[in-house]
Length: 102
Image (cartoon, rainbow, N blue to C red; front, side, top):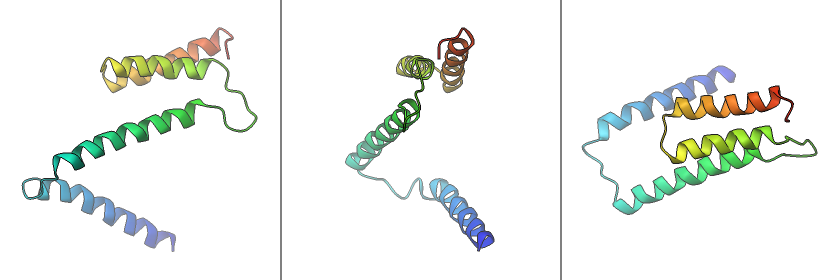
């Protein structure tokens, strides 16, 4: 059963990767659809940030994680490369934890 799921996932992934270049010149989504997809991507990323930043359950995450996310958000807002955003966020969180701010 597990092998069948892996094969189906691999085939679906390959089909999606092939469909982009194959259908690029044939299918043009309307401007409204493109705009909705852009908004959907922003909403999903915002939800991901909220889920990883906000504490779940009784555990407290302290100040270091939200500070790292804030640094990453500011850098992303100013359109810095994604590697810079990730490294700066991780470094901010790690340095704050290193100096004892949790």
